[in-house]
Every structure is written in C-alpha cells, then in structure tokens.
Length: 283
Image (cartoon, rainbow, N blue to C red; front, side, top):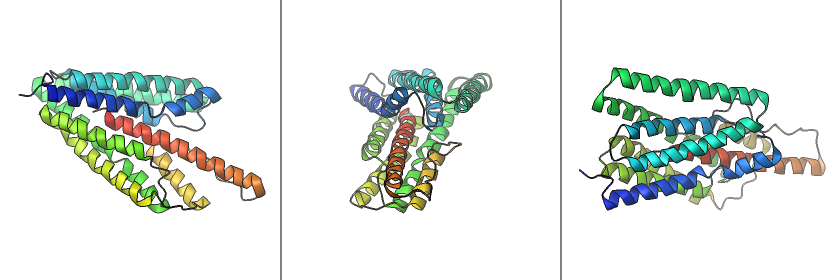
C-alpha cells in the first residue's frame, strides 16, 4: 500500500498544501479593506462559515485515518485562517449581520459538527465510521464544487470575465489535479472522487475565460443587477450587496455611481469566488 512516506505521495501532499494556502489567502484584500474602513460594506459571512465547517469535517475525517498528516495540515491551516476571517467580520459587521453570523456558527459549526461527531461515534465503528464520514465529505464537496455554475452563467450572459478571475480558476484546477492524484496514490476514494468534478469545472471556467477575455461588453443596469443577484445567491447571502442606481441622477454623479457599483461588484465577486475556492481546496 502506498503511504505518505512515499516520496511521490509526499510531494503531491506538500504541493496540495501550498496551493490550498495560496487560495486561503484570496480573501485577504477584502479583509484589509474591511479593517481600514472598519466596515464589512455588505460582504457576507456565509462563505467563510461554510469554509470553516468544511475544514472541520475534513480534519475529523483525516484524524480517523493513518498516514494522513498532509491532509491534516492543509485543513488545520484552513481552520485557523477561516477563524481569523470570521473574527474580523464579527468585529466590524453591523449588529444584524453579527447576530446572523453568530447564529450560523452555533447552528452549523457547533451544532452540525457535534451532530456528525456523535452520530459517527455511536452509530458506526472502525472502518464503517471512516466510510460514513468519507461519504459525508464527498457529498459536501460535490455541492460546493457545483457552485461555479452560477458564476459561469453570469459570464455567458454578460460576455464578461470580470466576474471570474482567471488565476482563481487556475488554482482551482491545479488544486483539484493535485488532490485527486494524492487521493489516487493513497487509495482514498473520498479525496480523489470529488476532485474530478472540481477539475471539470475548473477547466470549463478557464475555457470560458479564453472565449470571453477579449470581449468589451458594456453591461447595462439591468444585466448588472441580474449579475449581482447571482453573485449574492452564490454566497447564500440574505441581502443585496449594492443598491440599484437612482434613475433621477444625471451627469457626472450618475457616471461615478455606476463606476463605483461596478467596482463593488468586482470586489464582492472576487471575495466570494475566492472563498468558495478556498472551500474546495480543503480536501
């Protein structure tokens, strides 16, 4: 049996850790902005809470297996980074958003994880417990890997790749390849399987980028509004990120507002897309 002591497996595991760490850092510009302005500016906490939950589940799964130290390190880093993000968010979020985030943490990261922990401990033993938890991780990863469908739909409709940064799609693909090969060499179906889907969606995103990268499309207010709705839905937000423009405003004020709205959408999209990719890299 191939183990993490194999130089090849160890190399893929180290590379997977490095790529995952790079993707974990994707939201850093967002939180630097939050700290400087002392406001979350409509950014949502859901992607970060989900990312923390994903890291916790994968960490529990890896702890039940032998020779999975590299899977443990990747998700330990994920837990630390996501906890820092959430702490910053709670510190600067308005009262309603702060309460929502705390409730979500209690419900998902405490209640949900404890439920998985107790059920897997008392209802399954040994290899059965590992298999059950492995399929839980697969189901969760598949649902997360399907998230880019909304982004891809926005790109096709707007013919603009501003909503889908190329480097994030590239790192998604690289991460899926590396962790898939790691899972194959480790004979770990639960790590290898979901990353096939991650690779497919990563390639599709890069193909879309190559098709639409040279398009210079002026996105009208209606289409921009629809795109914003897709982005907010992708991050499972309960509120809109930006407000619609006032039709009575004219001249330079209207132009400046449109430019600011475009920038806010790009920033929010980069944050949400980067964070979703962070979830995907935690396998």
